[in-house]
Structure formats: structure tokens, C-alpha cells
Length: 293
Image (cartoon, one colour):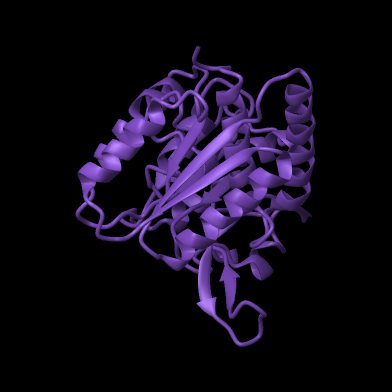
């Protein structure tokens, strides 16, 4: 078994981004600027947003976090997004999910200018991804693709099983792995909570990407020898054995599955760090107008 070490690769990519930002500044350009909007006081969302801001600072980006109470109106939030869309000094915008139930996620996503949609959720970016055109790809799937690429994992002709069909991870992941690209060129099976006898599919998989949101869902008896296993799960449980008071578990039973896998991502230290790096890469591309003029 070998680790797909997200921490190692994320550190390498952040160093590359830092060097590029330093060169931009030396040439007289401003640093990339990412704005994050956080509505309410969800603890996990606060942690994610703070992590994004901290990583922006590490690579020399400017970042702004706008915090609003849970009871702000949908109209107020949409107006604020439009204001940011029209600000030429802001390159990327993310609205942290989840949002309060009175605010339409669809309206929010579609109001964000697709040229600043560094989360890759806008229909324009999703459509371009489907056509294998340059675009901002959703951060977690894109982070996984970068991880596979950096470790030179051969994917062409393999059977990839994706577990979980969310719009944020599972669905775009299945599309990316099937595209005529590298990584890619897989035969893809997309499984989810309603798939009967899911082991029938997982035992045949050369590559397993697990994003179902259930602690230790994938067990050793569901995996064939030599499989490549990517664990997207981030399941938090209260723990009195850690400094921060909680422990993270993946969707994969790492201790047992790692005995059969050829490659596997750890939790933490795997996909989560690559998600942040992917967001940084998208923001840098937005500042450079690489995809959209």
C-alpha cells in the first residue's frame, strides 16, 4: 500500500502558486483577491472559511470574509453578490454552503458571475466541464484529479466506481473520470444510497472514489486487491482524546482497506487539503483571466 499524500502534494502546489503570485507582484500586478461569504454561525462552515483565508495568506492572495447573520434576506445576499460581480478588484467569489432554508442555493449560484465562480458550481462552468472545455471545476473533484495526476496514476481503461451522487463531488467526479483526458478515460459506474447490492460494483472497481458521507462505509470486503481508493469523507465525531475536541473519520475503513489497496488517501491529510489547493488554483486562473477574458 502507498499513500496518496494530499498534504505533500498540496504543499508542493502552494509553493508553485506562491512563486507565481510573487512574479505577478514583481511585474506590477496586484495579488489575486478571493471573497468568501458566510451566512450564519455553522461551526464547520466557519472552520472551512477560516482555512481558506489562512491558505490565501500563505500563497500571497488577498482574501476577504463577509459574515452575515442567519436572518439576512435572500434579496440582500443576491444584491451583495451582484456588487462583488461588478468589482474589478475581486477575482473569485465563494458563498459557503449550507445556507439558511429561506435562501435559494440555486438563485445564489446562478447569480454569481461564472467568471468569478471559483467553486465551479455555476451552470456555465458545469456545462463547459461536461464538454471538456477550460473552466473552473468544482474544487474537490479537481483536487482529486490533481492528486492522481501528480502521482502519475494510470486511469485509462480502468473501471472507476464513484460512490455518492452529490452535485459538489460525486456527479462531477463521475464526469471527469469518463472524459477523454488524463487522468480520465475510465469506464465509470456511479453508485449511491439507492443502489442495490453496492458490493457487486465496488468489488469490480480498479478505482474507488467514496463520497457518501458515512463513517467507514467502505469496508475491506467491498474492495478487490490492488484497488486505488480515494476517500472524500470528512465525518466529525466528538472526542476527548484530541486537542480540538473532535476526531475526523473518512468514508473508508482505512485500517482494513489499506491492507488490500495499492494506493489510498488518508483522512485527514488527503482530499481535504487538495480541495483548498484547487480553490487557490481556480482563483489564480481567474486573476490571470486564463479561461474567460
